[in-house]
Image (cartoon, rainbow, N blue to C red; front, side):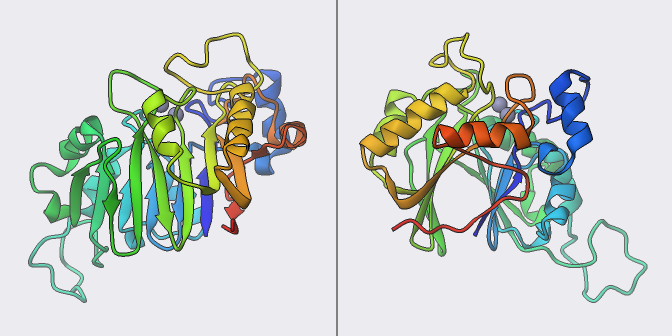
Length: 290
Ligand SMILES: [Zn+2]
Ligand SMILES: [Zn+2]
């Protein structure tokens, strides 16, 4: 089970400082028209990205962060990674459970060991809060490298290079879990050639793609940054033409900003005509490709 915990771009939807007509309308409409920063949960124990409101997002959709064992971080931009929360995992070695009640510390129960995968900047930012002994925070930090597959007990993944911010090695992830294959591709502009090559090695039950700039076509979407709906449509056609989507495979757009796409209730039907599905916060995807 894959669930979107958040589907907006950095400024969120409505934009936190904006009263334009899209932002104002989304505030009136509420429901699916309200989007928080992008993140996703793959049950039971995988999280993709860790935005500033992740405690609320997880709680709203019934996810206990203490049960998460794998956190795949796409990149260190603040809307995707808020490492400050990691400090609250500190768990003294000599902590006796159940606690007597007079102990100090942020936890009275033992969270599962968390394996965090990310680029160099993500790991550096995490260390800022957990120091040189991540184990004291029941945390293991792992560098994720583009093209280097990681095989774990219950799932595997391949990080691929995103076309996003050349100042750090931004990643997208191909995730194989329970016989299903997912491509999680935000944040990215049009796929880099080396990424496209790896993408072609798999067939997908679910593709999740960056749609930040919506209907805005007046920029070069092959330059590092973000995608728009036109690029999403081109990607869908390419996935279809190369049989990269399994039968029943889904192609879903996330990380949508408020200034080039109307609120969800208006936007989703427009995208449906293009064969694209617009994600909303809390949306569950049953992986059913064959
Ligand atoms: Zn972002
Ligand atoms: Zn970003």
